[in-house]
Image (cartoon, rainbow, N blue to C red):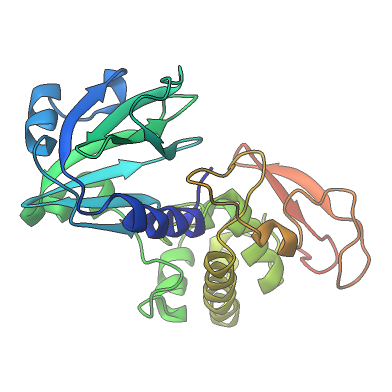
Length: 273
């Protein structure tokens, strides 16, 4: 799944490749992606252009005049920039056609992604955006904020770090890496967390996500490259997908367990319960 670092990378590349291009048509091949009336969606976009692209957590936010197009890639969503005369792939469901003969194509094998048009003055009234927590690289993410959000919950730490209403943008990969860097067992309950551990989470989240953005995100099976971008942060992963390997700190074998239905990787020695 694309996480915050991957979304930041996609945002950067899209800014370079599609800003300022006039949208002459929007071809919607699978309506389930669109969370608006289809004709309204097209009417807002056709004849306009993307004047900026930003992000909130795992959401891409395309600015179009007085409106935003909010786009969530979910499990396997990707954007591709292609020539208009290229054959349409069976998994390309929404195609933005530009005046210059270039398309921005949304590709999603599972069709889980969502797009929603909202007026700019109501962005934070849109429930999925309204509920987003603080991003790992935001200075507003403090140890006190993390402690207040976690310390009342009898929920495993892995599940809490995946909760987008707490820290926005962390997914399965980076939650594993943050817990390892913080020396926290993924099964530890939020109610047992200490202020010191919350500070470790703050520091680790910021450091790991900043480095991953620098290296273009993580390219593994669940998130492969699009837009000609290949991430390299997978070369720096310490535990995620490392089951059976030795911990780089203590040589204990990395284990994989399920937490809240999600595969979770950790070191039993460095992350004792």
